[in-house]
Length: 412
Image (cartoon, rainbow, N blue to C red; front, side, top):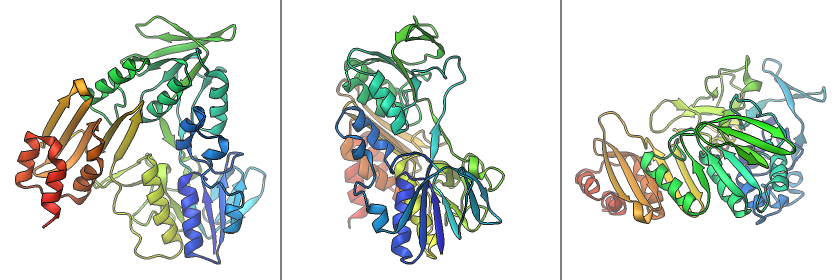
């Protein structure tokens, strides 16, 4: 059996290792398009602040790790997939056959269609190559603009601040992390960052970037232009579905069933590129978070190796973020459901916030700030679809009692 995996991020590596455990005699090839050993994007901020060197970002640090597992690591770009012929065309002109193929191609950063985004000095923070540019151009006292205060932007934000740059964050929405935090919690996070010395401009658009004498000028809507050394763009990501175009069924991502199979039975997809079942809605969505990617790829690998019971029941939308020491989290349907109920505790002076969302007496979503002790319990209540009964009314009065509610419903 010849297994091929495209994508060398955490999901692809987990898939390859799972396949080796399940198929000791199979041929396994792991293909990545970057001239780097498999690494974790989540480790890039730690590299930016000097906590780890480039080697510390590698997913597996032993130099012979993949050789020891007889996993061929191929640093090559894939040009196209021949689904009928079960082969890949590589950019060096060669072809590689497969019996089972897994697409773990992840996602890529997007840039808004504004003038100047292709200038030198405008970078993403997505690859190790990007990181090298940031390290060279964002040092103590340098003026830097970070476009985007979403999940990725907020991870980068702390690393930039710790590098000692004069940082301005520009976010077009009315709050920070708008896809995981409501207006109140996102506003509190903005205040927290400003108190830490970071300038945050929400409800602000970048109209253009220009270059003159080695400096970039960032034109802002309703604000004075900024002259900076570096512009870092963190305005969103898009699933890498190009290889599947015209070959597999695609919506926002590559559509997969509960076995992570695509519309071709011998081709699987997992992680950021896959549009799989959503636990909360019962529909399908792309969830570009690492826990979902790793879960997907482990299940896909088991099924590729002939497993029968590794079914994907749906991923819960879950985000946990540390921004300059303040932990925020969102779970499930954190924006609520039609006809549902909500309970909120807001202690803005202490940067504490919790919002619970109910459908009848079932907790379906939550949004928290500065309340880390509740994270595991909230996920458990949502994922178990626990009927809270009289405890719903107690939580409506005091949403911090979620641990008591959990224990009351789960321990006889």
